[in-house]
Amino acid sequence: MPRKRKTDDESKTSTKKQKVIDFSKKESSSEEEPSTSKDSYALPDVDNSWNLKISSWNINGLKAWIQKSDSLKYVRKEDPDIFCLQETKCDESNLPKEASFPGYYCYWANSETKGYSGVGLFSKKKPKNITYGIGVSEHDKEGRVITAEYEKFFLVTSYIPNSGQGLKRLDYRQTWDKDFRDYLNKLDKTKPVVLCGDLNVAHKEIDLTNPKTNTKTAGFTKEERANFTELLDQGYVDTYRHFYPERTDQYSFWSYRGNARGKNIGWRLDYFVASERFMDNVAHSFIRDNIMGSDHAPVVLLLSLPAEAGGTLYQLSQVRARKTPRKTQEQLNSNNMTFEVHPVIHCFSRPFSALVRSSRCHPSAESTGREHKRDLTLLRRVSKYIK
Image (cartoon, rainbow, N blue to C red):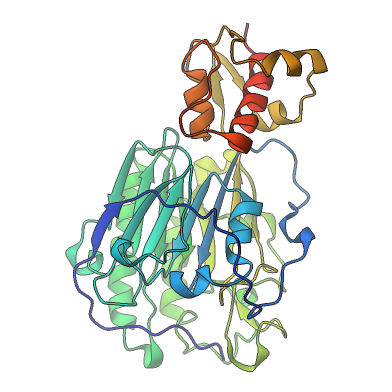
């Protein structure tokens, strides 16, 4: 029976700040976890229409996670446009010195209770707005929710309360589920919602290895499952089950006890849930169950969002795949190359957006070396679509 993380009954008021961090340090040489193979970062069999990648991971403590060999490697290899963390157990004043993360805006919500709860959100594009909590003081003291507003959708990352050993917090969890559902529905009236994180519920029997023996275990009670069903019934979709409706061998959490991960005795507790009307923009949703570094695995969502460039809609993935003549590549190596690119091209690369704000191609202050080369390559390809 999986043993869930420790749950405190009371927490102090959470604090929230913004800070840009950088994960550019070399990976730790720790051999605590098995290494990840080079094929671990391959994408599933999915079409090339996506242009935005969101990753979510319960890391079970930032300080411990940062020291594990595959943790920072995952961030580099996955290269998500938006990256969400749950159960950070660390606030801004106590970040490990190894943590640094250029090119991302970083937001934290944390409990003042030391070593408890906490979520983080990292975004290459600055959100239009950031909100901490759900507006209910009883819940917001534990630092469990960050909401980022983008042009086309809200992204909500959350670490849902665990009902605890002996279900001592089940009544509180019931209250939370209702209030959180009301919060999501309020957002959904304005624009579609994407919810990600450790939702601390295995919705159906196929979402855990041993359903029959866990009906009174936190995360699989009839109350928690019914509450999740009610959320979906109000116009939301479990994106993983949309693509894998019958799969029974893939989970996102395994107890550290009894070699549960090696035996694949697990639970699917980590989700991307999207507004039903937004599903046309969802290209794929999957679990990186071969990525080590926590008792949870990362989950990934691929989105296809239209980007406006001079009134033309295009998909960035199609731009990336397009070949460019060598002559054009050589011409673009010069910083004096001029492009007729007047409107801002809306994409999730902050350095790239900075480059296209003017009609002359100059390196942005924060984009150098490999990042600048990437920006030039993408700008070159996009320019071919603009008349």
